[in-house]
Amino acid sequence: MTSKHIVYLHGFASSSQSEKAVLVRDYFQRHLPQHQLSVPDLPYTPAEAWQELQQLCQHNKPDLLIGSSLGGFLATALAEQFGCRAVLINPAVRPHLLLQQHLGRYFHPVRMQHYEVRAEHLPQLQELQVRQLQQPAHYLVLLQTGDEVLDYRQAQDFYLQCQLDVQEGGDHSYQNLQSRLADIVNFGQLA
Image (cartoon, rainbow, N blue to C red; front, side, top):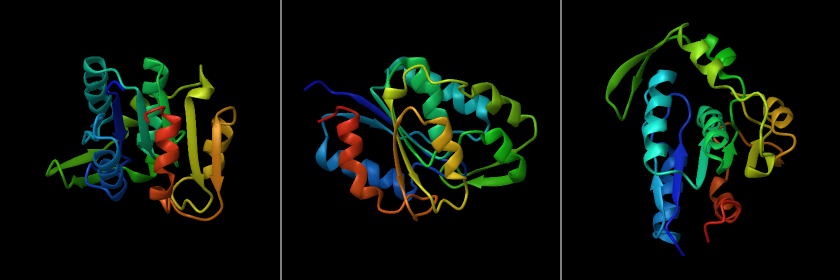
């Protein structure tokens, strides 16, 4: 089997060292070492993050994107651009509206730098928003109704034509993600 490129995208105020990112990285190292997994630490300004993702994906086109929360939003835009499959974990649908409540200064633990979420970043996110999915069959969307950060119904409505998996309970971090990793691999046609 040829090596495939998988990209995992973390959520807002998260990093490559998050519990989910480490879980995914460990799984791929243990079970699918023939594939290349990229887990970039994204800048927090949308324009810079998008530019970095463009460079990464144009250099090595992804076969599968895995995105959590804001990473799910970005994975959707990339999947539409590159025509690849995507697995979205409690994805943000309209982050430009959500982040209006989170303007301010933050610290990135991996990049070891402060960053600021400003009002002028919100239109950058809005510009990246996909209005209509071209190939809904390319998406597996994992939602938990107990998500305390995002209203799962927004994603359920937007991704209605996709392969949707809605679990009762859970939370924004997506409880028991490890039990879904084989499903993610199968959907991505990686094994």
